[in-house]
Amino acid sequence: MNDRLALPVGTTLDRFIMRKQEDFPYATGELSQLLRDIALAAKIVNREINRAGLLDVTGAYGSQNVQGEEQQKLDVIANIRFIRALRNGGEVCAIISEEEEDIIQTGNTKGKYIVAMDPLDGSSNIDVNVSIGTIFSVYRRSSETGCDGTLEDCLQNGTRQIAAGYIIYGSSTMLVYTTGHGVNGFTYEPSLGEFFLSHPNIVTPRTGNVYSCNEGALNSFPEGIKNYVSYCKEQGYSARYIGSLVADFHRNLLKGGIYIYPSTAKSPNGKLRLMYECNSLAFIVEQAGGKATTGTQRIMEIEPTDLHQRCPLVIGSTEMVEKVEELVKADALVS
Ligand code: P6P
Image 1 (spheres, protein in one colour):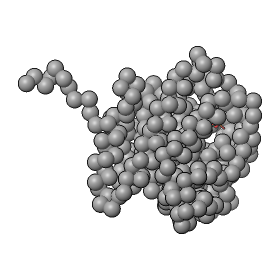
Image 2 (cartoon, protein in one colour; image 1 turned 30 degrees about the vertical axis):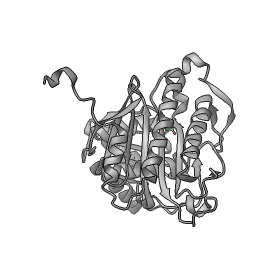
Image 3 (spheres, protein in one colour; image 1 turned 45 degrees about the vertical axis):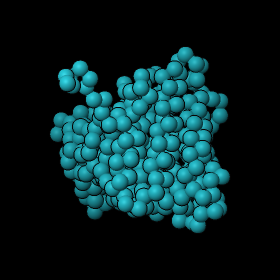
Image 4 (tube, protein in one colour; image 1 turned 180 degrees about the horizontal axis):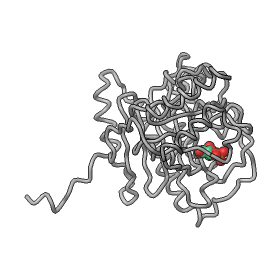
């Protein structure tokens, strides 16, 4: 038989999830179903992003989110789509979202899981066709099933994540996730409506020559971070800052590099949120062999006190993150 006439299409996300479920002898399939629910919402949001210019869903929605940021129409749409998919899937009892001030109760009181998500990060870039992304974390509820999810369920530190991932809506749409057993990337094939395994066992380079930060705010960076930016210039590194966290993170994950959003005059605690941006990407980068800290503390060990709390983020190739920590520590010793 001439196989070349019908090359295999590869491993679908569904088949991969089922195979990986076999790695969990006592898995009962709820997490697998949850991941499928996320993938379904991602396909729907992908379709709406790709048609944004044609459907009058670009631009501002005319309200602000809990962060006081102008909501884009697609922010609101993506938030609805992911909440609806997770509610209908039945596995999630409660959700925290960048777009919602309070915990969203799904009504699935028997659901074992909590999802923390940024439904559409970088959405101000939609109108100019820059890559954007969805970021999510999954936790096991700590409260008993049979009731709504509690604040305690939602405020767990990052080491208690059981899964995390992101979807990048770019030149191609990819889903990258971990369940604590490595990181795998899936590329969406719209003509088949399936995600296919395209980046198995992602390992991020231990070092790199790309740094991502908004140097427009450099003057208000902490001294140690300023010193690291100077170090990058001395080393001849390339500055790459898209203004879309998922896009910068994804490039650095695959090629090596570092993304830094420190405390600034405008954002004294940093701009990015712990529960559904920093923790999620920290879990992924650590599983891929990288590192994620505030510059002094491991991101995943921060004990959360607020659903939407912010923290400084230094994330990427281990040796680059450790250089930042070294310079931050040196500055602390002299100041
Ligand atoms: P600044 C987008 O709003 C975002 O949350 C990240 O995706 C991005 O990296 C960052 O903020 C950009 O922030 O202050 O540099 O414009």
